[in-house]
Image (cartoon, rainbow, N blue to C red; front, side, top):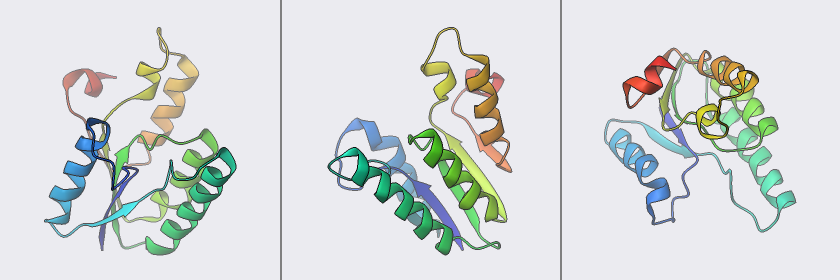
Length: 140
């Protein structure tokens, strides 16, 4: 099976999720099943944390070792949940693809923090293929 995992909120109708929802829609026409990682659902921190952990557990049960998984990167979650998501869900797929929308280590601090770059590289190296939007992202 082929899956695209997105953190986009399906009912949100603004530009913040347009690229994600466009990719979901295009890949769905190519046979990918769209799965959502619930990164922002809940009324408070505790319920959002619970929903993220529940979402990771749900995705872990869905993705099988023979599957292809495309992840819309980054997933915009806490460090704990991000690491858990990659170690429990992504690594078990046969073929792993990342579509990079943003590189948080470049966006979050200037100049970029070396430790953040290392974390980003560890995560991106989990993927067999990494798709970026421009040469600047490719070089970094």
